[in-house]
Length: 198
Image (cartoon, rainbow, N blue to C red; front, side, top):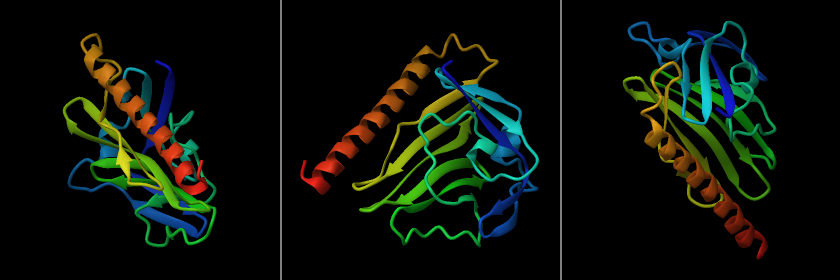
């Protein structure tokens, strides 16, 4: 395994943003939420390892629940938001400004950023969800100068399970990530060509 990614999770978050303290209840009392269901479990996609952990306290940035860092996410200048949040302003109406965020849903969790550069609005993130037994899936997505796009589904399996039969799934995961990174490279070249006549 090349990298270890820690996701710290907990049912009720007491959060602080630049606009002040916000209390957000994440857990639906009638069913287990994504973060409740997977707290204390470890998963691998064949290259990386994710550890979902319990955490009590404030979250002010990704490093409070993701470590050492996601394999592709970069922090942008701007505040960190826990969504949904009614008082968090997510409009990017200035140049070179944006925000970083995590969005908790009952059946998923998203880590992402959005940024307005000098020329266009761009954003990137990953959404984790589970719709199969003993599998967590994720999709990496990005929006930039051209159309938005996303990776193929990347599947994660319990670290303590028999992984010897998952060779094909791990190969598919690597292909999905490589194809996404190739799309980003093409997007960057085409954007520079369009904007700067390269």
